[in-house]
Every structure is written in C-alpha cells, then in structure tokens.
Length: 456
Image (cartoon, rainbow, N blue to C red; front, side, top):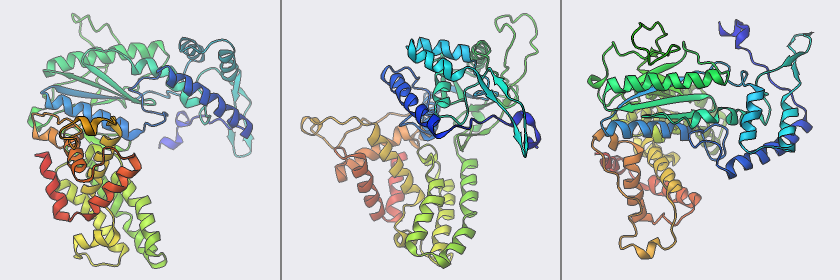
C-alpha cells in the first residue's frame, strides 16, 4: 500500500560525472574541516569514516546495560523524523555552516550549489515542468549526507539532564535514565518536549505515529505498570493545572533499529528468531550451488551470505543466553552440512573442522576481542613497566549476572586471557585478527563453551 502513496516518493538528484567529481573534492575538504575542528558530535555515527551502524548499536546497548547494572530505570525513545532530508531549510543550513567556520568564498560556493535548484517528474514518456526546490539537501549527491550532518548536529549535542542522544543520520534514539520510573517519566517527557521545540525551530517534524518507546529492565516484573505513558507535549509542559490532550507515544516491547531487533529485556529472543529464519532461507541456495561449485567457492559464498548475517552487530547480541545462541548455531550448522552433503546428525565439531569456520560463539569472542584491541591505546613502554604485562585492561566491576554477559564486562577478561596466551597487545589489528581466528579454530567446541564461564 505504501507504494501507491505519492508522499512516500523522494526526489533523487541525477548528476553528471563531472559534477560528482567536483562534489567529491568539495566533500573531502568539508569533511577534513569538520574532523579537524571536532565539529560533528561524537553521538553521530552516520556517514562518517571509521563509524558504522554496528558502532551506533554497540553504544546504545552499552549505555543501557551500564544503567541497568547500576540500578537505574531506563527508557529508550526511538524518534522518527518526517522526510528529514527533504525538509532541511537552506537558509538555516547556510547559517549553521557559517557558524562552523565556513565563510567567504567557500560559503558562497555552497550557497550557489544549494540555491536555484529545480526538479521535474518523469513517468514513462511524460515529463513535468521544472519546479524550484526551496527545501532539502540533494539526495543522491555526494555532498548531501555531509550537509545534513551539519544541519542536525546541534540535536546530537543536546545537553539534557539524565538523557543521552544517539543518532545515525536521522535515526535518533533518546535514552533517559533515573532512579525511579516516576523520575524517568518526568525527564523523558521534558527531554522529548525540548527536542520537539528544537525540531520545530529547525523546520523538522516528528512523526508521532511512528515514534515508539521501550522501557528497559533486567527482569519482566521490574517493568513499569501499564499505566506508564509518555506524551509528546506540544503544550506548555510546566503548566500542570489543566488537563493535557497531547498525543501518547506508542509503547512497545521490541523494535527494529539499524537492522537488529532490540527488546525490553535485552534478551535478543526476537532478533535470534529473525537470524534463524534468514539463515535457514539460504539452505535452498546452497543446495543448488553445491552441485556446481567447488568447496572454495561455497565457502566464499557462505561468508558473503550466511556469516555476514550472523556476525552483524554480534558484539551487542552475542552474549545472550546459551539456549538462544545454540538455536542460531544449529541454523549455521545446517547450512554447513548442506554445503558438504553431510547428514543432519553429522558431528558438530567435525563440520566446523571440515570447513574451518567459526561457530557463532567463536564469532562473538572474535568480535569482542577485535573491538577491544581497536579501542585499547598502545603504550610502547607498557611491557617493561608492568610486572604483569599480560594484564592490559582493567576489569570492570558489575553488580548483576546480566551485565556480565555484555561487552563492557566480558571484553577485558577475554582480552587479558588471550594476551596472556598469544601476546596480542603489540600486534596490528590485522595481525591480531589472524592470530585470534587461528587460536579460536584450534579450540574444541567444549573448550569454547567453557570460555563462557567468564560471564558468570
């Protein structure tokens, strides 16, 4: 039904090759200026070098877990902006660029680029008249995403009490944490009200119908009562004497965010079910492919189609309970057995050894170790000044078993353990990855599962 609605279609800029070359040059200079002066917020993960959707998901879940482990009540409001790229005000954008230090000839160049643009609609052989474009950054252009980051940057750095904003382009999440649900309710509504005021001043609109919120907790009985509601106030929120008729935001127990399904207990049940379904759908593909392709080709396709699905954001969800993770591994093993013409009851350890691929648990450990290696600053004199030089990362104290399954608790334990065995601290990222993969492949299935004892 959505394909029949005209409002769901967006204009795409059809650019010449010369235009794209010039835009790439301008975009490189613009990004260098923004990075050099640390203008773009650390909470923005979209369209930035060295940052990805996985980083945004990791930051989101890490913040939630730390809050829950500290006994804080947590609400995540997943904001949906209406046609964010198309409603950017060009005069406001140019003012924001000037405040970022883009002035003189450079600003004149961007002003000329953004103004006096036109568009037309083509349906079959019919072409409409040209119409001027007074709003929006050009979609399909090289500069468009960077210009949008500048426009929305103030929202990412919004300083709101007890709140944190995480954005990937226009996909924005507002996290609110406090000691009680009453406090969370107050801060959530006041923070959302402040954001809506900013959006209105910048000619952006919040889609109330698609904006949803999740109340996070470690246990289901710790959830707030059904009467817990969050309103998107357009009235004066400080005026509590009169009844409010502002719209309620939809409350849900799970939501899809950047390709993964986040639930209120961070148990990842819905996400694991989705993974199992997607992986098992590939069985037909490999049944047909195994007849014509050799083992090297099959393994290459497996990495491209199956393992890429399984390993996506595994740092965030890979620490889920064993009963859920083993179901994903069964789907993975089913693919591997089909590729090798092996029966269903073929040995688990032998099928992984046959293809020399990592199980789901091993993929989780590898992702955790590599992320920790990337985020650990290397000090050349560390090896000589420390008595126990194998202990590189300080262990994190946590109060709950729940937090012990997630990255911020398990990563220093795993990294120190591997560094003691393989001395990975001084290695480059590529060397660390090759060494870690080789070590994990040498472990038996039982030895791998015994490593999960660090979670307890």
